[in-house]
Image (cartoon, rainbow, N blue to C red):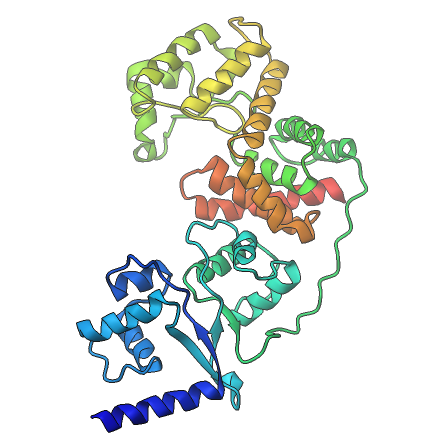
Length: 398
């Protein structure tokens, strides 16, 4: 038995002396189980994978015994558990992965930065190519795929080469020289049914310093939401079974379909709406609510919008279109500058190499749909809205 172990040790030393070694990142010293420890660093903890890891680390005939698991756990805690061995005589035979990033990371750019990897567009193109993502453009879905792989320690770093791709450096896209006023005028002449709303909100965004692509992203979402001052419709006449429970509650207890559904804020009593919103607030918006305005603000955000309306019309019982437009624009800017500023900053960082492009507009719409609008079936709607944002960007900049 001792002789067999000696042979194994000598063989392992021989391998290590002629190879490059990559180790798993050390897990917490408090971990009691190799399974939990592997999971904590984003590594497949199945028996099949543990058996492979064990063999690589000199633990023969792995059966998952307490002694074997303790041996692996000790190595992992000390950062000495071998992840891969690249034989210098045949470097392309094995794959090296990037160290797993924190599970809470939301951006591939920040995630790569956090583990000391170049996060530029050029390097991300190379990483994407070696990980099977062709024609990488920095699209939101592509970045999420890379990020998920990195979180799980499955993002390939190289296959025996530090240069995984020979993709050409993309040609920089020139910044549009057209003024924001000209872009808004082009939008007003478009075929969009909500072009008046899009033009007003777009101008407010430009006035507050937002990039053209981000403006297009916001407008791409609004185009699929509603017009200024619009009350969410509860008239599911063709498919009544699809009406949300919160609107059924509104119809039953507040005559919502008769008084508000599909109407504009310019045609209702703000005093009555004030009473309604405060009644819904008492139930913490758990029973009834509704979307209002171009963004279809709901719940507490609807109340915030109502306060903006009141501010613009000096607490009157009615409001005109221009006042409503200014109120909605102010709330949108306020939210993007405060509670949702992180998502704007993430978008800006992720698209810094192509900030003035249709791709950046698509990514803006996708992120806004996911984290700001948050509609049902947002995964599919984000793609549709991204494509609309591309068209809006093109209309404004050509």
